[in-house]
Length: 340
Image 1 (cartoon, rainbow, N blue to C red):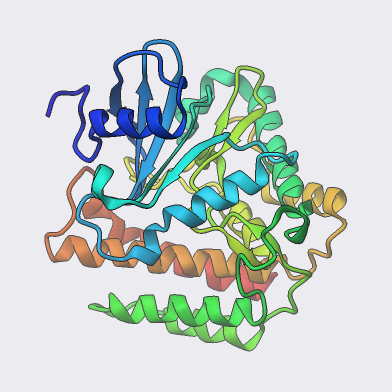
Image 2 (image 1 turned 45 degrees about the horizontal axis):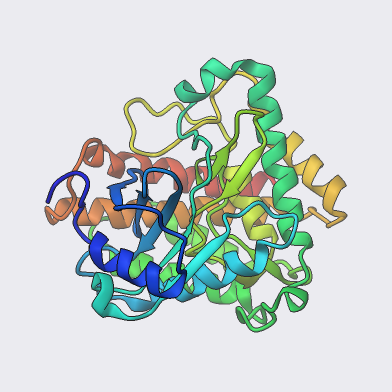
């Protein structure tokens, strides 16, 4: 495959579909490239030389349809587009596997930068970095203010028992990748189960909300929220807990884990919590539980990556050091829960 025809993207078939479904949209031959950085689903930038679009599809040879549900992603982005939440405009959804070998959707290309590390943020300087992170909180408040029923998402998830289900789900994930002793992880899981908070009214949640899943425009405002594959209806404070967790500065040398919290100007967790509470009107008394749950979830995800590494199933830089990080995440989870 040439760089203009990356694997998983048949540009001739895509052009035929666009011409049939959206006549007049495409103005010339299509070229495309894979956008690096996506963790599971594949994302391509496509252009006819004038306009640009993005194509999202599951990984090549995927088997878990539920983990790569293009219809859900397309649905939530389409529903949120008319609201104040910044998302790309969708162009079409294709559930016919014969076009690209899997279901996919097309959306408008949005200009912006995903910031994955403190080093990438450094040129912005402290003040712009601070404003970008406060904007991240404000945009999350906008998302959680959307009435799911008003945008056609009343049946987008099962909010009843959401936290209990999440805790059980991640416990099962942990059991699936157990191949070494991890002191404290069962204690953390059990302690989270004993102190489940009462959830506020459910909202649309992103599920993986952090700085490197949004595009910042030249004005440092959020141009688009990306990667909606974990979105559902549920407890909005799970999004807050994850954002707080990612705001704790971890000095991880040469790590594949994205960390921006050490950047100069990055607000500390307390300021982000206060801003969300003030702007959303929600009670954040139990935020330490949600943050501890985020540490637990990330520990389980990292342990899964480490487990695949020990089986020789991962490729790339830094995977040999993922295993060392897991105890650090467990320790942070326990401390957060104990100290509140």
